[in-house]
Amino acid sequence: MSNNQIVVQEVRHAIEKMAPQFKAALPAHVSTEKFVRVTLTAVQMNPALLDADRRTLFAAATRAAQMGLLPDGREGAIVTFGNNAQWMPMVAGIMKLVRNSGEISTWSVQAVYKNDNFDFSLGDEEHISHKPALSNRGELIAVYSIVTMKDGEKSREVMSVEDVNAIRARSRSGKSGPWVSDFAEMAKKTVIRRHSKRLPLSTDIEGVLKDDDDLFMPPAEAETAQEAQEKPATSKRASRLQKVAEQAPIVDEDGVIDVEHRTPDQATESHEDSPI
Image 1 (cartoon, helix red, strand yellow):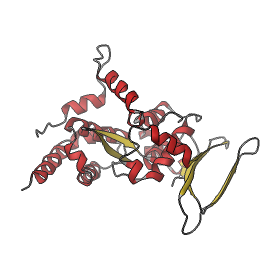
Image 2 (cartoon, helix red, strand yellow):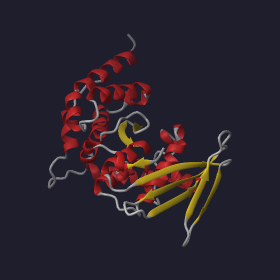
Image 3 (tube, one colour):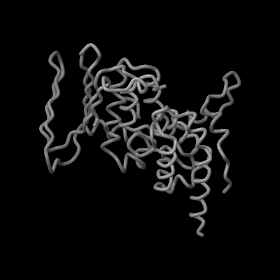
Image 4 (cartoon, helix red, strand yellow):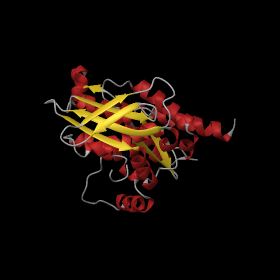
């Protein structure tokens, strides 16, 4: 058996042993078995995670469970920076949480390509018109976000691909991970984060949007933030995430959401221009 196979088995065994912790963190409508299966698949599909510090890997998986999101690359992803793993919510996951929160009526986030028929205007008569080409859409040129509030009022945000790339250039993760493999999704996430600053969202949803801020800070700022996190906090009680991570086994070596269709259980269970 190769060393890589041994590591895979070690990580698989450790994650499977964490099933009780995941079950305690997950909302009732998310199956523990499915969460463990998707997490194991995510780790096996990303060899860098096998080399990541195990405690950060377990903490990232636990954070995903606390949000009730799957690390499937769509709702969220576990990514690496150096030797550390970290949880990153993605567009579908953010939208899922917004839907469950019931704070707004609908939220549509779309990507615009060169051969689409696209027009927008600002000012007193704001509007966005978008007719996607059925084929050969061309390269990405913009992303936009439209939110309809509970009272019917609409809010809009449009970003060009140049705007998005300017943020990517300042991002800690701009040359790796989803920015490379799923640029359109990261572009949509960028416009979501900018738009969210003008929306009446709960602290829970704002926390999700800011949850991976340090992933996208310029390196110097990220290092400062990391140093601050590592300072002992004698006056604070340990968070639930910290407690779960400390208990983790150690192994050596499309946007359109309509909240009116959410279930009662889902409604109760949802517990830049800075770089994203």
